[in-house]
Image (tube, rainbow, N blue to C red; front, side, top):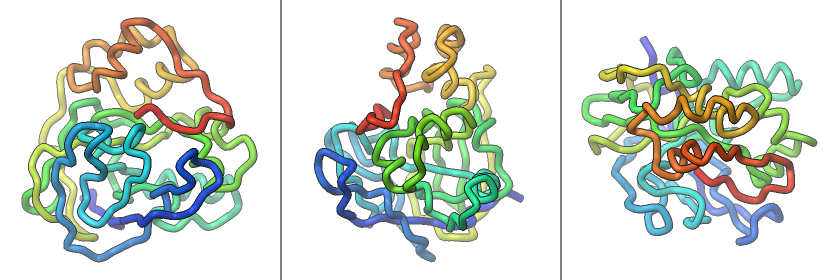
Length: 228
């Protein structure tokens, strides 16, 4: 059964890769329980997890980026490729999952975690210079983009509390084929895919607008912030 392998929270950490000089990417495992709630609109609300810090509210956090999930299986693949250990939370993820296909998750798919919390798959993570600087890997934005296993931002549908070890159950899958992988590829290197995204009603408006305009994101390691 899929489960929450690690629940990770971050405090503000000094960085030279953000205009603000601080980042919340340094996530550390906690046992919980941790309160989960909708944080509010982007630019005002931060993380969907109590005790988790989002520093740049202009570009991070808010309802469509309330919680970030990354699969332990994908971290393990990267650890082999990079020849370095990658502990849970190493990619700045709040939820390190086990046994669930995050890359293949559908936009609008809903996960129940533990007894009460329901989260909805919203949009992939787009890599930025802060992420590259945090890992210290040259050319990381392009390397990460080429793999197209970006992890998923989730919005909070039902609040509650979660703990490490909680089971994860997919309780809803929408009737379309727009996955995290497809959205990521469309928004980055494969703009011809952008029109296919518009059938996913749960995709955030910013991403839908980009799909309507068929405008991909230009990626390089000088990018300072991620738009979602």
